[in-house]
Each structure stands twice: as C-alpha cells, then as structure tokens.
Length: 243
Image 1 (cartoon, rainbow, N blue to C red):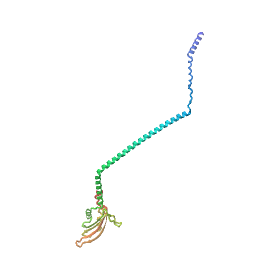
Image 2 (cartoon, one colour):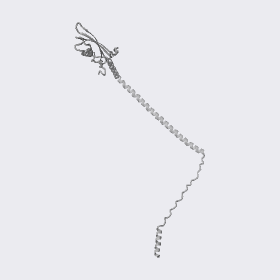
Image 3 (cartoon, rainbow, N blue to C red):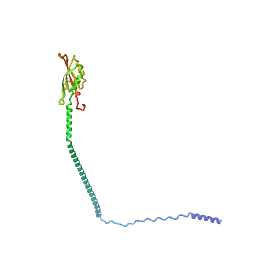
Image 4 (cartoon, one colour):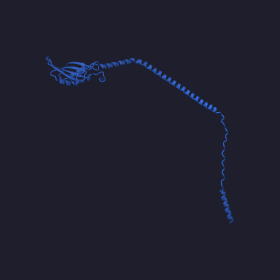
C-alpha cells in the first residue's frame, strides 16, 4: 500500500511540473510626457502689421514687375510681327513691279490678239446676213418643174446694220430676204405646184404666186412668184455653226 501511494504522488508531482504556468509578461513603460519651454510673443501689434504690409508690398512689386515684363514682351512681339508684315508687303510690291515690267514685253502680242479678235467679230457680224445667192439660185432652178427656166430675178436681202422689213400680216412668217422670181415655161404653168416645190428650199418662209403672161414673140409663158426666206437661209460661214 505504501508503494502505491508513493507512485501516485510521484505521478501527480510529474504532471504538476509539466503544467507549470508561463512566466508573466513585462509591463509596458509609461508614456513619456513632452515638455516644452514656455514662450511668449512680446512683439507689439504694430511690428507684426508692419511685417505683413512689407510682405504685401513685396508681392505687389513682383506682380508689377511681371506685368511690365509681359508688356515689354508683347510690344517686342508686335513690333516683330509688324516688321514681318511690312517686309511681306514690300516683297509683294516688288513682285508686282516685276510682273508689270515683264508684261510690257507682251503688249504688242496682246494688241495683235485684240485686233485679231476684233476682225473675227467684224467678220461674223458682217457675214451674219450673208446668203450664198449663186448656189441658192441653182437650188431654185432645181426645185422648179422640168421645162421651167428662171429668166429674171430680183433680190432684197437683210443688212447687218439695218433691220429687214417684216410683213404686216400675222399669217406670214418672219423674213430676211425677198426674191422676186420670173420663170418661163412652154405651157401654161401650175403656180400652185411651183409654190409646193419651192417650199422644200432651205430657209423657205412663204411664197406668193403672181401673174402669168404669154410672150407673143417666143410663145413662152412668163410667170412671177415672190419668195420670202427666213434666217435659215443664211450661209453662216464665219459662225461656229457654219464651221
């Protein structure tokens, strides 16, 4: 019994050693108190106001100086720009003078061109009412029936400087020329057929049949027809259309 008791006490003692408490933590040191030396502002308010005014004056001086610098720089820039523009104007004037001097070399050529243009305009204007009459009379002869020969013709044509007389009847078209035609035939002519044949001519406006008489000497019948032409009969050889 004594042995068992001793063994149990040893076991208890061993467990007590194994479960011994941890050593206590060190306490944190108390905070240090900041100790400042006592100060007192013994300057009078006038001194502080004087220092503040001095700072304001210094700031104003800096602002004024900066403004003056900007003004000077702006004046210098404006002067430089003005000089540059003046130089550009002088250069442009010199170029204009050079061009005018060069143009003098071409005055004769320009005068010649103007004269040629004036002559061309005069040609177009002068020939604007021109009709190629020899060729047109051939067309009249070709349009008449076989056996009919043109024996007389009287022409009144428009002028480029004066208007041509227009008909008073609204049934007649505008005209630029009048052809009084006299034709001879071996038999009594049918003037209505003549007028129909003449209506195929270029520039035909209208035709008015006249009288028919018989020549006792030759036995031929002489008939008169008045033919009016419009501006489609113009030759236009100097106009763009004529070209």
